Length: 251
Image 1 (cartoon, rainbow, N blue to C red):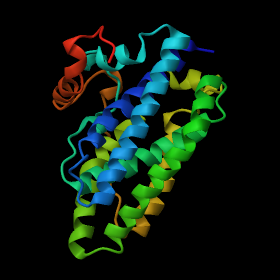
Image 2: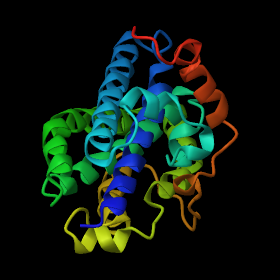
Image 3: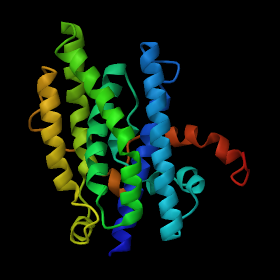
């Protein structure tokens, strides 16, 4: 088994979860209704837990820094999250669309990984799969409700948010040189296989919502190679503010 390929896969997943958890947490106390305030806060907590578990695998099996150090002790160029997760929340419509597109991919990704030949990742995937099912259900419900079952304004806002998010969402599947090794070793089928399954799922939901998928959009790439938007650095500065006061402290 190519351990470097496995390590890089886990790091990409962990960084995505960590950064999106922070973005979701920014809705705490700011949701459009109390139910959504609670939902986004709960989902943020779940994603932070997933990130911590992934960083722990990296620490235990690959000798990487402890989860807190890995999450809070790196500079922006060391992160390999997709640019999609680091974008500001914007209005609720954009955050909801991002929530759906990301969690559709995560639900399918963890489903594929539940039978991975790398047992620590397979075990974690089976453990969190139920949480991801809830995340996806929540997002799908609101996408359809605000699209097909909403007002003309809500439908137009959802379509606009989908158009804005789509190129960045495609960047989640940025291929790496590790894909072939991961597939050959039975660890993970690869980003292309995941994107194909994701497109089928998303197309169905978007149709039910009465929306249209953007055509001829080019994926926004670079995040997996450490190239990020101007938004990641201030996010990290805010997220690590307490940690940087005393990195050796036990809270």
